[in-house]
Length: 131
Image (cartoon, rainbow, N blue to C red; front, top):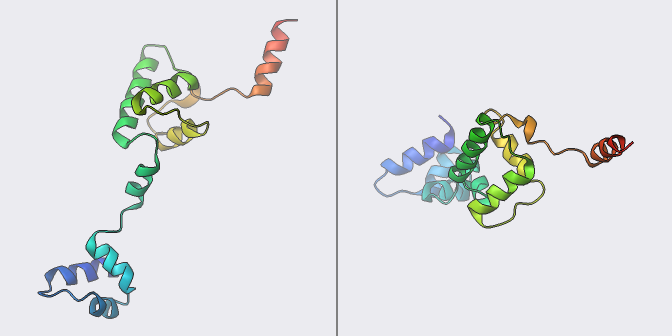
């Protein structure tokens, strides 16, 4: 068990919790222990969720929608996925949002259809088809 967990357990069983005493006993910073004990410190996952465009539940809904479309042999393009995300949250995702979402769900999503084509490759392919 980590020292901070031991200190929090010690404070919870104490009749009158003394954060300063527990911090000295377990060699932890007093302010850090106080924040953890009062519940002011959040996990990294919870902190990152507040920064995301979609909550974790809404991202799961979007991933299920993408999977269903792929099962129907209608894989969505990045523009379509961005439009679906806009419908879910009411805000246009930025240009890097899809890459982050793909990274969070890489074990679930088959991302070969969600890769945006490089602009130079697109121009080269388009020029070659007109010749």
